[in-house]
Length: 109
Image 1: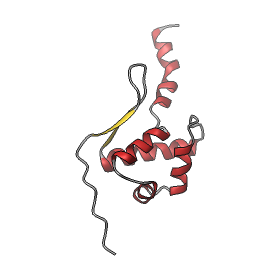
Image 2: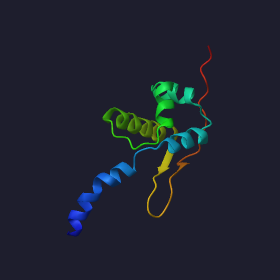
Image 3: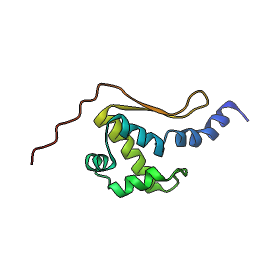
Image 4: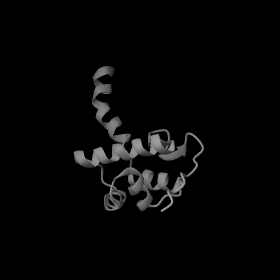
């Protein structure tokens, strides 16, 4: 098999490797001192959905679940400056902040 063919064969695997895992979501929330309710409010994704996703370690296969995971990743990255490191042959997964995080003040009722 040529190098190009091997690369093409590995593309779906690499793409799947860069999908949020339940532990990455929990780690990002912990880094931001955020509970599931806070994430639900800020992302527009229900707390129940977040809870179900965090409890399911199986590889995401359903298109709707993949869409939710991509939306959560985008939300964490754009709103809070979270940077995800996905597991590879050289390192494990992790989270860090690209910039200092200052919690937004809660609106007064």
